[in-house]
Image (cartoon, rainbow, N blue to C red; front, side):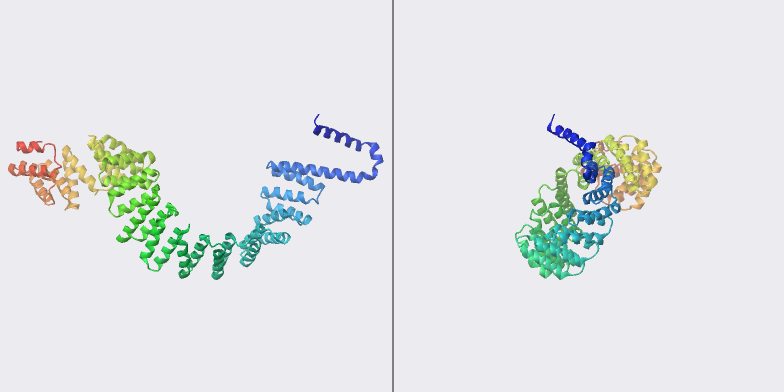
Length: 574
């Protein structure tokens, strides 16, 4: 038998003896006292059971046992406190308050009783009563700074700013000057328009902690916010000369100089800030983005490029820095360099949608078709639900005359563009071209017709649709009507004039065709137009002039595969 079990058995035997009739007869005078001790033991049992359930987070059951204990021993401060705590856990704050008050009434020197009561008052939005509880607590324990902080917070909630300042002053008397307290006092003084008092707090911090640049910066910010920049500049210049917070000082100085109209000095301060790696890249990128928005002249753009280059040098692995640099290069018409920078940004961080969008756009503009295919497919692996990327992918394959892949990509993207009519038109326009190239003429025509139903003057569709119909020698009157409509709207566009002329050629209206081709030729030496002109001349019996035009067309380029045969055989090869 263990010693613990032995003690329990011994106690049972002992208490059995105490309760025996013989013992009761001899000790009747102790009956009342024994009865009371038994009651207290029962109260303690209930309290212990309540604590067990409290620790198991069963607060309702805990309250039940605490109440039973309190019924036996109503004047126990600890039990009242425990009930208040358990009720607070169930958010029954109003019900808990009387028990917390009773605990303090029974024991008026327990710190935790006051803290609980103040918390209950605060949760019940009884701020004056909560403040009164802390006033009592600081009277009992005048050297506890936490109580003064809570008291000050309660004063602030009631808008009693003077009382809050007094509470903070009491804290400083006990623990000395701290940033937290001084900053709180500064905010109160600024809110109540006591600027000089706020500045005095700032000076106190600077003097107390001369090696901490943040305090000088905080004071400088108050000066600048209140248009007292002449007082801020010496503080900032001191901080800027090599301290850890130098970049922030440079930025504030930049703002001050810009407000004073000192543009060159302002930009120099930005340059100094951007040249330091202690300023986060994301902050620099945001500052540069704002700079770009507000400085749109050519000189400022050049400066912005320099700033962007500095960000990259100090943060060579920051993708967003490259992204902004790419934007600036594109804005300065340095598209090839911008494309390379966007590509670098995509390798550093492939999650930035805008980088991929800009990269694909430049691939397309610069006719980098292989890159456009590669980059669009990489982008689609990351953003498969972005119709823009399917569009670029389809466009690239169309340029490569891989019509089936173009169709697949464009149809996939079209599903994502169902709510955007303009984008749908763009998809259908390109699908018309892709289906035509794939020999699926019915689908090609349907795609073109869908565009024209929503946008009857769509230049690309009117041109391509009419031209492809002419090559297929189908619906030539419709092709004529469309090409005429297009030419009339764009009378100076040689390509559109050529399309109309070619439709007329297919209709065997050679004289009319010649008239329009002569208009188109005036705008330059396009090989396609020159070859068409030669064909028309041949049909009109002007063989010598036709051969001359074919030779010019070959020299200009962009001709059909039959051009050499036409020249060699001196006749039209259909």
